Length: 253
Image (cartoon, rainbow, N blue to C red; front, side):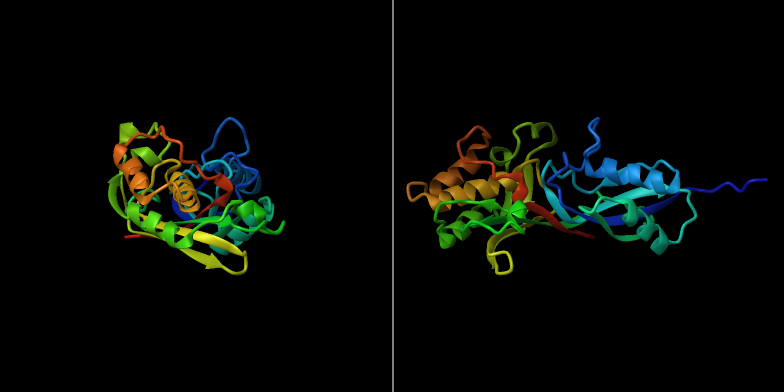
């Protein structure tokens, strides 16, 4: 008589280079992060799983700390499962940790803070880092850039700085920190943005708008502030390329 195996919830933290993928969310096209993880799990353990991620990163966006949950009735050792799964994944995706999920845990609930990095280069980057940042070929006033970022800290209606189709879910969000720092090993600048949740394209549009404003003497902080307050996504400030964006970390309450 066979023993009934009850599915258990597991939490994984994943890092990936999103260059060759169409984003996190599974689609009919197989080149997604979630789809690749699911297919590889089935190949190794002969079981289907559903996978719920904390953030639906877009095509070309990277992650160091994406969080996801799945259920499985496979009676595996955690370390052996992680090693076996990683051994069959492509080299641009790695499972950093695999643990039993705490009771009631859902990766999209009770998020205290997400941290995103946006990298950009002011000198042509080496081939080893160029796929992880935006080469911006104009001088940028870094002091002005920080002043631009300060405009977005706090609770605002970010409709002007999202995809434009998010209004059905509301577009008010809170940014708890936004600052720029230099990253010597990449010879890049990093915009760090933190908050509990973000809209689609929100960080890329903020990064693009701030970098553009900080590089053009005729664009002012007042104009950038007015663009935010206008709550209209149809403006001429750029949406920074996806390659510069990385989901760095998610912290839960």
